[in-house]
Length: 193
Image (cartoon, rainbow, N blue to C red; front, side):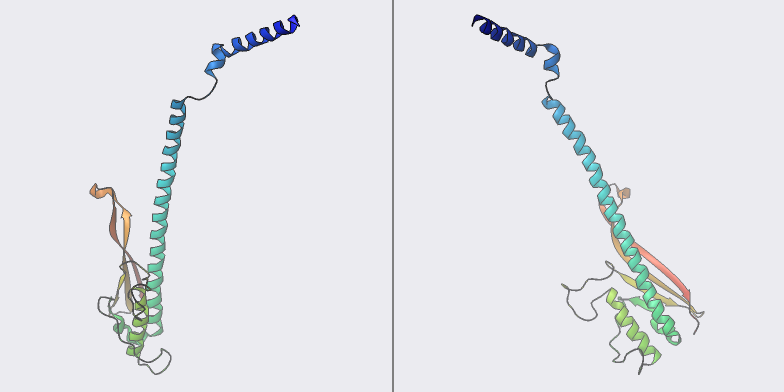
């Protein structure tokens, strides 16, 4: 019985001596400072990722608006190609010059070329303004603050300029804020009547 007690006591001493060893206590775990530094490094990395996502979203939105503007300009140019005898009737800045009234005729029959041009402009103006009266809550323009200028010359050259407003991060003013910037797409074509 004495041997067991002695053995038990000697085992307890060896365990206590191992726990007091300096090499074991240094590797026993992280300190609070190490954890805080690790979290700070992780946060800096996450902030970089968030910044890249915001920039990516802004770039994608700008590309979307540019493709919409090209579509809008191409749409009216196609209508003008279908009605080459009334090219001068398309001239103007829309919706600033106003939207023509409904001509009461469809494009295929019963319209003069000038009436067909007015009808084309009316339907095309839905990209910029609430032509059909759906209401401000339901109407969404194709481009923010969008407008277009159509110019025809005596030669069969037509120019369609579509302008819209984007919010971009531009630190040229030193404010480090998103500023409103006007963007434009300019398409030119020759249409022979």
